[in-house]
Amino acid sequence: MSYRAILQDTLEYIDAHLRGPICAEQLAARAGFSPYHFSRVFLFNVGCTVMVYVRLRRLAYAAAELSEGRKILDIALDYGFETHSGFSKAFRRRYGCSPERFRLRAKVKRPELPSLSHMQKYNIPGGIVMEPRFVTRDAFTIAGYSINTTSEGGVNSTEIPAFWQRYVQGGQCEKLHGEMFLKSHAEYGACFPMDADGSFTYAIGCEPREGRTVPEGYELHTVPAADYAVFTTPPSDEASFTANIQGTWRYIFNEWFPKSGYEYGEGLTDFEYYDTRSMGETGKTCDIYIPVKPAIHIH
Image (cartoon, rainbow, N blue to C red; front, side, top):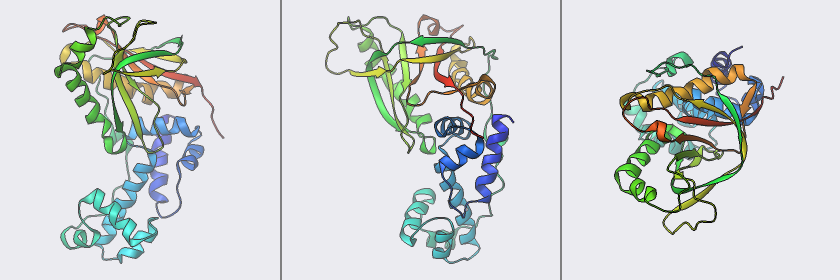
């Protein structure tokens, strides 16, 4: 069964069991994946962590039942909230008002059955032929800047591009590349291991020369040793470069992983690598390094 079919089955299973206990480990075992690999596959296909998705679906069904006139506490208990207060806080964060006010002002239908094919679209304008090369890299350090962000609600998809824009336009890029401690001017965009709640550190930086002192004002991040599958994005012009990178990420998790015999390496760091091939207005490419290990399927 393909990854897409497995995830579609998972989405349908979640909808059918929203009133009962659901946990990420249970869903991973049902899908036949290790919990860590399942969490990464789910995130890249659906756009949020699996338990965030479960909470959002529960709140969507709860909103429909509010419109149908059921008691708020009964709805809260049915969808796994232990108290009226806890349900109200979660509902307000999602819908911007209390359940009571929502019932007065809004009427919504029950959610339709989710469709993964409707959730995602490939966007690889330059076309793509993806046969990765495999490399082993020792641990290395990057010096630069970082932010803390989260995958919850797709926050990272807006915060990381904004971070890059500030880095380029705010003088940090020019300052970093003017330093004498740099080993090279190749840049890394590194995503460090994700916490259970979807939060993680994202860093932009360059490798410093061994033995050189890195002055204050720069952060140092260590990328651990790992085996990588390395994908090169298809050549593109400036306008389609970002879309090609995003499309390559989708390809990796939607198409390559299911057939590869590999899983994402737990506790490791993935990164984009930008060197001289990323410069200029045409023919732009970059490398995407994915830490991998042999797949473990649980049956």
